[in-house]
Amino acid sequence: MSLPLEGLTAIVTGAGRGLGRAEALELARLGAAVVVNDYGQPGRDGSGEASAGPAGEVAAEIRAAGGRALAHTGDVADFERARELVRLAIGEFGKLDVLVNNAGILRDRMVFSMTEDEWDSVIRVHLKGHFNTTHFAAAYWRERSKAAGGPVYGRVVNTSSEAFLAGSAGQPNYAAAKGGIVGLTTSTALALGRYGVTANAICPRARTRMTEDVFAGLHKPAEGLDPLAPEHVAPLVGYLASPAAAQLNGQLLVVHGGMVAIVERPRVQAKFDSKQDTFTYDELDALLTPHYADRPPGETFAAAEVLGLKREDEHR
Figure 1 (tube, rainbow, N blue to C red):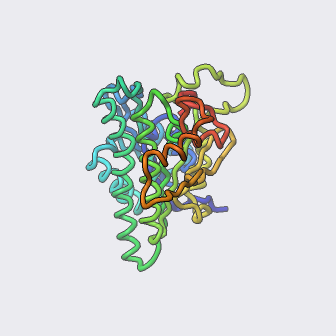
Figure 2 (figure 1 turned 180 degrees about the vertical axis):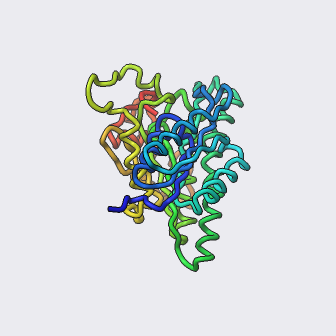
Figure 3 (figure 1 turned 60 degrees about the horizontal axis):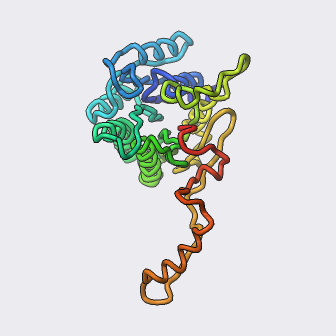
């Protein structure tokens, strides 16, 4: 019996720990050869010396279980290191079929206290890192499709967050980066669909080094799998990487603890038309102010409320 990802090659970034590790192990279990990428810095804020240890350990774990894997320790937010990563996968395993973008850091602070470096560094690793690897993978698939004269196999799975959906008061950089990743995903989906490539994004909720303080009050059960274990997220990534998910393109899915929710694109809640050629201030005041009159002061739009999810900093 063949495995669903047998014969495919996957890259997983940020795969030395947490979610990325669980995803890399799952893709390998489903039959894929995996390039495990992780820059290996010990601090979740991107601090500390880079290390080959985390990526190497996960790659070794996959090989010990009978799979095929190798490690890459470059910083995917560096354009040339991202190019190198894609070339490594193709050179070692003959092709690239799946790209899972997961690498990220946190530098949390309220918007009125955040420094320029705290903003730039998080946007760089999350958003630019996703773009860099996607750019080189997309160019590769496009050339393959031209050479083949038709569609080829390609899957992109990007990592967004519920911080983008619901807002996160102490994470303006992170929430903005994760919102940008959704925009990158839908743009990529439209651009690459003609070549047979799909791009989707997930908003995972899991207990990892990145979220240890967020879930500090939610203790692991004495028995059984932790509802916040990354292993709840990994199967969805495996599915999105597989041939079975060919019809999913440009989608956003929330996943955690045995639950998957498909998020609709924003819909118009209300519509107002001017009675003149253009609106006046008084007309807008008469239309919009009553519409929001029943809302508590300062309440913000939170798409995640539709999913029954908690607000603000209770999750990421």
